[in-house]
Length: 86
Picture (cartoon, rainbow, N blue to C red):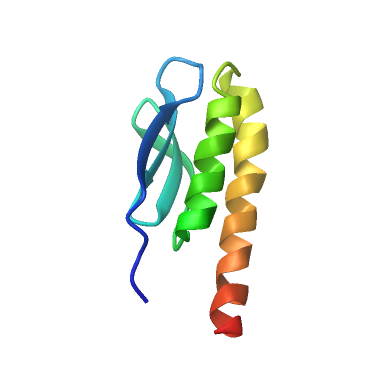
């Protein structure tokens, strides 16, 4: 199964905090350190995270992580179910 090729780097409002998506891997980065990540994203999941990141761009790091941590968790949990459905 090929990995999606969606690329994004979206600042999340606090200095150094950003959502990055590259080849099916999403990560919330703070000054170069990954705070949370999920792999195996579909293009649709990546696009949803990108759309949400743009909505949350003015948040601080705590608020962003409070949202993106669970969002990345949902993406991680969805991957095995998608594979099982194939």
